[in-house]
Structures are given as structure tokens and as C-alpha cells.
Amino acid sequence: MADWAPVLVGVVLFVLLSPGLLFQLPGHYRPVDFGGMKTNGKSIAVHTLMFFAIFAVLIMALHLHIYTG
Image (cartoon, rainbow, N blue to C red; front, side, top):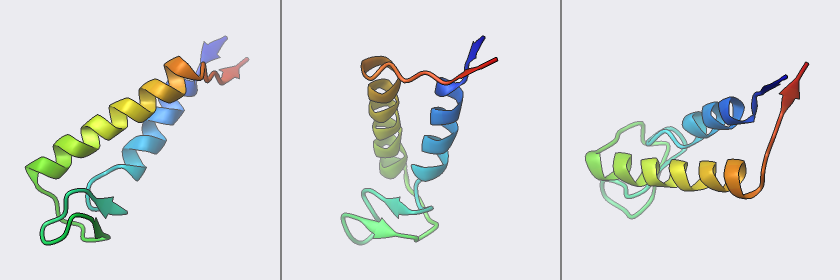
């Protein structure tokens, strides 16, 4: 049995938290930009930290598992 939760959660979070796709925190001209499709170094760092925090909570703290079999 393989646990697919880390893979699926990682892919979904990667797509949703890509800077500039849905939102960018911090934005170029405002604290939050929506759908700008542009990015900068600060927003990449912030989105990386958000990814790690959400991923760790979902996988380790909530013990999320998806088994196939």
C-alpha cells in the first residue's frame, strides 16, 4: 500500500501557491496582488514558507493519509 497523501497535497499546494497565479503576497505595488502573473524574490520566499507550513500541518499534524491498493 502506498501513501499518496504527500504527493497529492504537494501538487495541489504547489499549483495553488504559485506566486502570481491566484495571488501574490507581497505584491509589486500592494501588499496582496491577485492574478498578476508576475513575481519577485520576496513573494517566492513567502510562498515557499506558506507551502512548507500548510504541508507540514496537513501531513504531520493532521496525519492525512491516502492509501491505494
